[in-house]
Each structure stands twice: as structure tokens, then as C-alpha cells.
Amino acid sequence: MSRKPSLAVVGATGAVGTVMLDILSKRENVWGEIRLIASARSAGKKLMCRGEELTVVALSPEAFDGINVAMFDVPDEVSAEWAPIAASRGVVCVDNSGAFRMDPEVPLVVPEVNPDDVKRRPKGIISNPNCTTLSMIVAMGALHKRYTLKELVVASYQAASGAGQSGLDTLRAQIKDVAGTNVGDNPGDVRSVIKDNGPFPAPLALNVVPWAGSLKNDGYSSEELKVRNESRKILGLSDLKVSATCVRVPVLTTHSLAVHAIFDSEVSREEAQSILKNAAGVELVDDPENYKFPTPADVVGTDPTWVGRVRKSLD
Image (cartoon, rainbow, N blue to C red; front, side, top):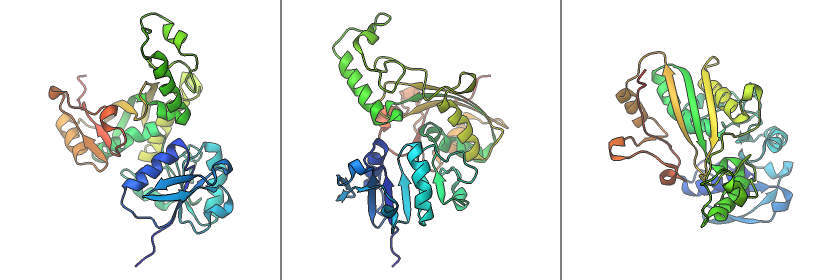
């Protein structure tokens, strides 16, 4: 019997890391040892995973000894420093940050779309896409396999969780601030009640904020450019036209997107539905006559890409 590979979760105490532990507990048990790694201030903390109580160890080169695969759920600067250190010790590093996504020597991989790219990893690092890109790319990849994708126009409805634990804590606090009040009828009255915007440029409770990320060229945000650049790399379409508008909405977790996709040939609604229904990693719920379509409240915490409201353009 072959030995199961060992796994390190780097950033195990953070917002993404704790979700990763929950996922590992629900999935098939394919790992041997699971080692939890975090900053020195979190060392010694006890966390549950797969029904076991595990002790967090401090991030150090030696923390990767005996590890086969490491998942990095940490900020960009931490991954940029520590993923190469782990890789130099023979660890295959899977990075959830943005540190390596556009590095030509690091594959940007979504298993349902471009799994073979993992074989080409000269730096020993595999990158995962931004959460907004990931929310649509499995469905788009399935359609692209049958019809060549030419253009994407995307509007996102991004949850507070995209801003990390701070985003979640801020929205929860703001909901408490506005609960039981009558604000929302007059300009500025929401701001009069909410004093702390947290990581957002404006109050998020009772509001939508047409911004996510930092300012880049020509008025685009960093989040919008990630959707463009990462989609091109994952699909292998360097000339793919992509226009994205990213909006933060008052949902705790689970991003949503509206995607207008243009292909090199005509695709009927029925053909698109059939492809999506049979695509790995996709769940199609598309019965608008009976108001059946995915919503964040219905699918939060689940793994597939949920798709609904499939339509063919009228023009």
C-alpha cells in the first residue's frame, strides 16, 4: 500500500485557511499527515481538521520538512517569500495568493479547465486564480471546449469575504449598526449610522459599492484586470477580449457574476444548457418560469460553480 502524501496548510488560522480546513474535513481522506502552519503569534493554537485536534506550528523553513504538498492561503508578500523556500525543499506549492499568477514559469490552474498545465512547473509552484475569475472560468471553460471563446463582458457581485476576515467582520458590524433603524431613505443617512467602512471605500450594508481592489490604468480596478489577465492565461487565449466591472455587494460570502460570452459560432440556449449540465464542476439550475436559479443564500459553502439564467442574446 502506497503512503498517502503529506499536506501543509500555510495560513491555517486565516479566513481562507479555516475554510480550507473545513473543506478537507468534508472531502475524501486522501492525505496522510496534515500540518497546520501560520505566523509565530498563532503557533500553539489548536484547530480541528478531519475530526482531529491539530496544533499550529510557526512558519519556518523546517516547518516544511517531510511535506509533499503545501497550500498557501496567505497574503501575496508572504507567498512571494515562503513558497520558493518550500519549493526549494522539494515541496509542491499550491498558491492561492496573487504573487505568482502571471509569472510565465508558474502555471495558473483550474483542474476542470487546464489540468495538464500542472506538469509544467519549473519553479515547483502552481497558482490558483483570483476568486472572481474562478467563479466563472469553470463554466466558460466547458463552453470554450466546444465553441471557441472570443469575448467576455462580465459584471461581478462580490461578497464581503473577498476582502478577507476584515471584510466579513465589517459587514457583520454594519448590519448590526443599521438593524432596527429607518436609514436608507435619504442621501447620506446610511453613512450617518455606519462610522467604520473597514476595507471598503463606502458602507456596504444597505448598499452596493462599484469598486473592488486598487486603482489601475484607465479607471479600471486591479480586480477587473485580474479577471481579464487570468482568464486569458487559464484558457490559453492571449487575445481574448475581456471587459469586467467588479461590484461589492452586502453578502457575507459567495461571489456571483453576470457573464455575456461571445463565441466564434452561434450557440443556442439549449446547446449551452446541455454543455453546462454535463460539465465537471458545474451545477445547472435554470428554470426561470418557476423562479429556480442559484442565489448565494442557497449555495453558500458548496463547491460547484452554480449556473442559471442561461439566455441567447437577442441582438
